[in-house]
Length: 282
Image 1 (tube, rainbow, N blue to C red):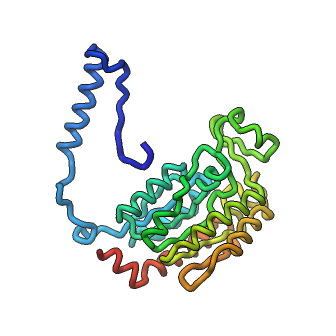
Image 2: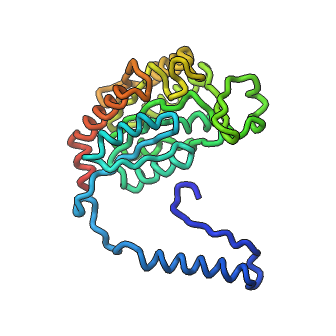
Image 3: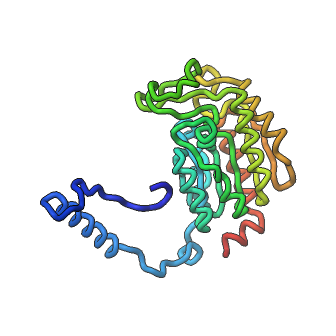
């Protein structure tokens, strides 16, 4: 059900009178609901501040950026509750819904791959409002271009005809990845850059010169420095950099420990600003 925490149970038979199947299904649903009511938290749960909880930070991850996210989360765990979101379309929407509801104190948007699928017709697309919650709420935002080297499709026979002849990597029988081209990366660079320009909160956006995913590394199937250079160059031409909004090039692959360390350092700096502390206190 998108980013909503809704549970659905299949009725199996149509709801036209009761029978042995529908009685069991409806009873299961009623008992599940009763269990959730009985086990619910106190209606007046303590706030994070009262309970001594850590401030929550949202982090986006894909399989090909997992090593970086694991290191980032490990480095932050003593001071932050790290909520990791799988960047499969619904993951990004879920994270931004929590931003809108005031439940996140900051965002490390390492993996913006859902934008690939939005623009190129993949199966894990963001919506046109991707990054909108950050724009509206002005949270500390550290982002990157994680997995912008790939568009996600299903089995090979589901790939649109217009993409025949492109460079593909078959992840498994149900998942086929398509390498993005320099021209597609320029389109994404403009789209992301224009969204970054609308952010008035503290922003650091990192560009890993050694590749944007585990597949985009020297010797790997999607290694393409020209395509990455087109993305980085377009971002630098599009983004209006200020003291508050900056692009940062790092001569490492996105999964390199030094890249993760730079992300952590930037987030700690942005979060430590007085404005961020005041937002968390509220």
